Amino acid sequence: MKNLAFAALCMGSLGLLACGGSGGGNNPDSGIIIPGADGGTGGGDGGSTAACNPSAQSGCSAGEKCTYVIEQTTPTVLGHTDCAADGTVALGGACTRDANGVDDCVGGTYCSGSVCTEICGTTPDTCPMAEACVQYSGLFEDADATGLCNPECNALDPSAACATGEACFINLGSGKATCATPFLDDPEEKTGAGTCAANPGTQDCNCVHLNGCAAGFGCVLLNDSMNATGNVCTFFCDPENNGGPTCSATEAIGAGPSFSCRQIMTFYSDAMDVDPAIGMCVNPTTWAGYCGGCADVNQPICNADPCCDNDPATTDIPDCPA
Image 1 (cartoon, rainbow, N blue to C red):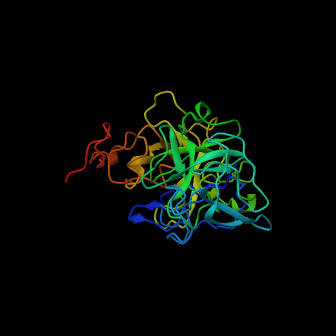
Image 2 (image 1 turned 90 degrees about the vertical axis):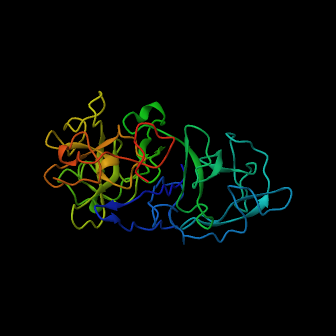
Image 3 (image 1 turned 60 degrees about the vertical axis):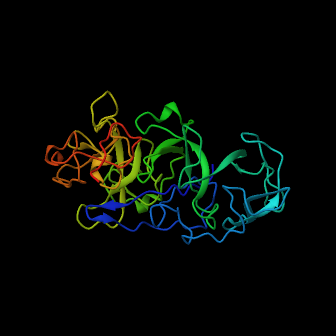
């Protein structure tokens, strides 16, 4: 498992809030998903300093590939994007890394979790159907908008796509969700609900990383409706009551019947690409009257304006006025 820097938008009622940086010294085997500082690049310095382009596989000589070369593994993993001898292991094959920190995958793929995985660009997403391009902390951070393809998933039914031990986490910016291993911060960092010490990563527990929550939860809810300083975990629920997860205490530890399932795409005005069938459990008292700018199936006060986007390919959401 590599260390994802799966970028996410951190939003409030007045627009974007700055998210934490990626912390490029993280262990790339820890499975940490970290929001990018601008909601799009997944950390780094926001610009490319790489000697070549890993997603386009350009800038190298014949017989070479553009890849990420590992310089050291302890105490932290460090590396850089550079040209290296091309490998022979094809996409999906088992891979290894030599003493110089270069894997044996063919150009255009990278050894992630001992498997050659496709290198991709995030803007636009260059991965094939049913996969999403996600960025990893400590990987291709010196290359602009570069990541690896991961299987997409449904936050309400992650078992359909995710492996055992993995959960489904949503990128609010792209609307796509991908499988990853939950990474729970130290219990002392969890200062939200009283159940957090016993059940870290559950409803209203403080979180830093996008996958810093337990399975079924996501680090996508602001920790305050007026003066947000960070994020808390929230349970993914079915706002349209189509038989999906609910905010009942038996499903969402730390939440309960008093919580309301709100559509994520309507809660945040900048998350229009999130599937309208995906919701999150919120405290209706804390967030009373909070509207992201469009209708919400479970919040009548927000039903004054319909949701819209400017993507002609989207058929279930009306286009915004010109």
